[in-house]
Length: 176
Image 1: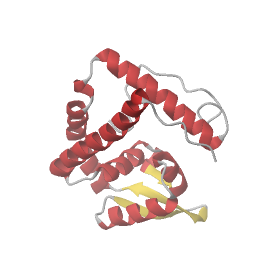
Image 2 (image 1 turned 90 degrees about the horizontal axis):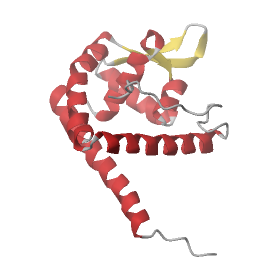
Image 3 (image 1 turned 120 degrees about the horizontal axis):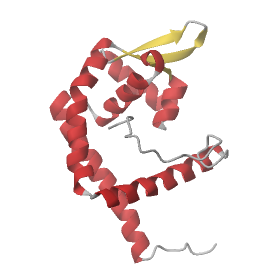
Image 4 (image 1 turned 120 degrees about the vertical axis):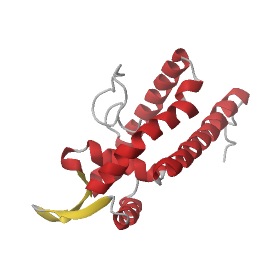
């Protein structure tokens, strides 16, 4: 057995910086979302994906894939959100074996209420802390990391979707 290639000081700072800021920023945004709309970061993420989907519904397989969760984790989360009236669980009319999650009116209204506070929180805890050059560099770094991991997971092209991802000047609508 060979010794691992231990991280040097710069590598360790980069790794721990990522881990710590990910946790700190997610916790801060989660606290803000809880205060503003009684909505966790996880719930917000699910609602955003459903709101952006055609017919405001996605199969469990597609939603789990988008969130990069197991279908079991998603099923438990949907059950909790269903009890709050935020989403509905339905079978597909043409394939009774497949289940879809659908955004409810109450879920859409809560998302509409939560979104402005969410964006303010993202800005306060991350975006406004960095200058434009730092944001551009961070965006490029995340593009590389996301492409690497999608490619490794799917084994099909740089993004795992058969074609390289192209950076966009358009604002990201997913979770901002």
